[in-house]
Length: 311
Image (cartoon, rainbow, N blue to C red; front, side, top):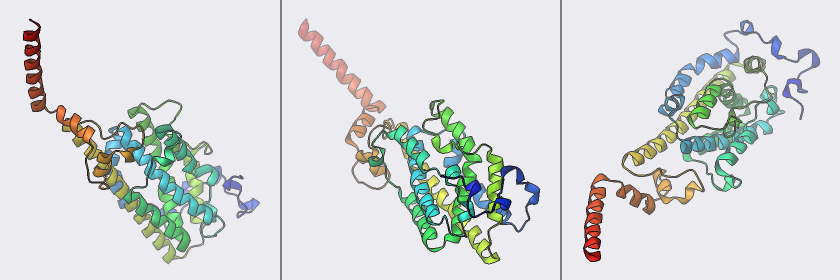
């Protein structure tokens, strides 16, 4: 597959190469600048969600990281399906960089690492992620001119703050130095992230868009941030339930092996099932101080009885 740097939509004399991109060439009315300013507040709010703050501090459980990877897989599967659909549409074609940017296959490798060969049977799309996915499909099929908002929000973030998260995850979760489990953050076909981002912004600015369409794209980008924040909040809620379970003297909801959907207690935490997990409940109860005291007393009585019987 040829690189989008040499896509047929751009003539030989107009090919945009890394070294030609200069920050001082932008105008306040360029789409890249309008997006940067128009989404600044949403960007700040997303960075300050509890999930992201905990992640940046290295307070991320492996089970939660796995679920975040699942959410990303469904999100990028939808996004890249719609990008493929619109790869020849002039409102998006200049931003079609499948070789350099697409993440679906990288995420599939991460999920195989975490869940095993049958990972597809062990994952499911969460409620918040499904809402995000539905919006992406609607845009790609009915308002393709807005697809740039979702591509910009995701990929530019992956090439920026995403690289910080990669290092945090590798260190906090003790992942292999071979980058297994974090392939999502590895862009093998981009030699210089900063220069590529300049190229991408230049392509965005060259799109033939009127003022109204640009405003709609900015509005859609803010929606994309909100969808991401809803996914973060959903993950934070699950993370708190895991922490509360451990604090109450129980064990983690799931050990990260096998199909998490087969644990009724885990499903209950997500609001998708009603019964609790009997095994986890019994182990959690056994770890309560009062119960341990009673058990110790019973053991002492039993030991005394056994000694009396032997004598």
